[in-house]
Image (cartoon, rainbow, N blue to C red; front, side):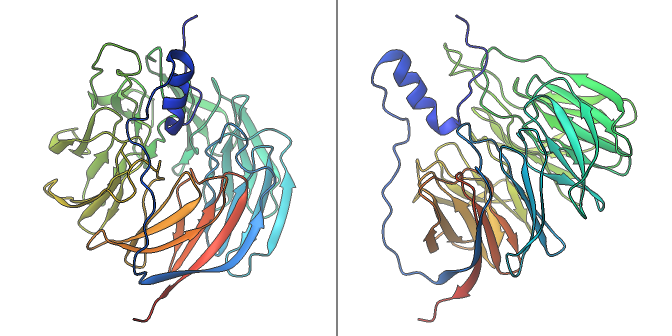
Length: 386
């Protein structure tokens, strides 16, 4: 039987292969956590349990923080608006359909993807559904918006543009899919004129938002090795676009590249396997590679400033920046803080035994963590006195 899609989180790939071919050791066994002198304390401000959380399939239901409210949904469609200071629920609705994506937004609406291949537009004031529109297949990436369109990338490699007002289809772009992919899809980066989209075939495409036509595309990662697993080259992270027109893109079994966004010209590159979205802070690029090393890279040159391997093999989340620290979660449910300047460990807290797979969200000196079992926690950062 041909395996057409890898339906497990990347961290479980070794388990999947072990079931097929006997005992297989993970490529990067998780390192044990060691004590360190903490300089930052994570003080729990409030917590809520959001329904059933991510479900057994660990759907990437990343919440949204905006304007003093955090919006969170569970895999059954329990959607809530929560005050970021108090943790009180402002409103709660049952959408009546299983949700599979994180939350996108514009000033008036939230946008979510479903397991049965729909995009929902939801009013931000009360959670009522404004419109729903069918796309080609299940949507795992949060829909993206500009002034006129909602852009949804689905698991079959299609990117669909919907009218923001009523959900009518404007155009669709389809890419070729390899036989085997990671569980997940890239999240498009949408601005007014164009959308940057990465695909499971290792290609990055720039689409004209007026027509859906490709303006330029390039291969970021080239399949190598004998087996289909060795040849995985997914672009599962979201491209990061800076104000000065640089585009940073990660790829699994491929490269980390800095591009000129208008032309696709490579400014610099380094061989680095990652399936997570990188982070730009000032002139520094932070990324987590497939071995769960956290790297700080000079954004202008690609020079590595530091490479922290303390958390190797712990299946980290994408990096987030909060009050001078890089925050990541791991498979055992810990949040780790690393000093952004040095890469040294600065703080740690255990959130949930169910594990953390979603990106951490930040605001001022606060961190929001949504665990796999649905526990949503807000932490305030406090400096520890010597």
